[in-house]
Amino acid sequence: MAKRILLVDDEPLIVKGLKFALEQDGYEIDSAGDGETALAKLNGGDYDLVLLDVMLPKLSGIEVCQTVRENSDIPIIMLTAKGEDMDKILGLEYGADDYMTKPFNILEVKARIKTILRRAGGRQEAAKTEITAGDLHINIGNRTVEAHGESVNLTVKEFDLLQLFMNNPGRVYSREELLETIWGFDYLGDFRTVDVHIRRLREKIEQDPANPKHIMTKWGVGYFFAQ
Image 1: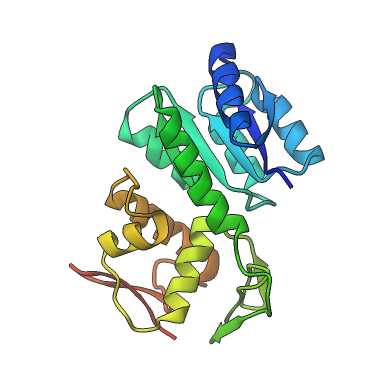
Image 2: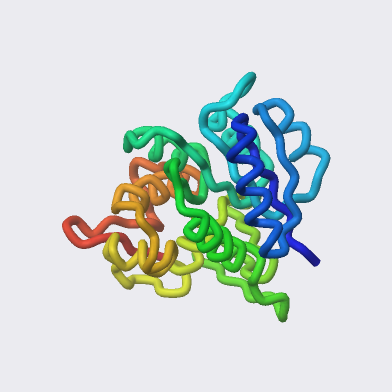
């Protein structure tokens, strides 16, 4: 079955170009030209990934992303015409899985989409594997997380980070290693991407994010998981 992508952008030429290019690769493309329409379609449709422009009429891409993240872990790639680092970090702050700055190369867009879809939807549908550490419990088969007895909604990258850590307790990962392992060798982001995701992960699974007991920092080296 073809993967369904919602393309949210108010520039008709960009929508037309991306739609044509992605349909050539077998994707089913739906589109929205403003934030409100995008949310309506996401609430009523079944999509595998969202390409979401930051600057949109009615509701910004950041607002859309934040709202979607309240009840969904659908992969989101932010599209921005601005090159400022803060715009990129803000997109990740509110749950985006990746970002791309316009103008972008369509081959890079396709590569990013394939990578994220592979990680989000290409998980094993075999027997469920579960990992428990103290008050944390993850089910790798259906990608669910419980912390302190309550369900926790993680983004694709947040789950991948937590799974990596829980599978390798005590091992210290540098930011470079985490970028290569979770985002891939061809990822063009920087180390702050890792820091943002670690902070968001702590906010979701730690009882006191300021004094974490699971996702720990090895100063000057990186991060590790304590059981």
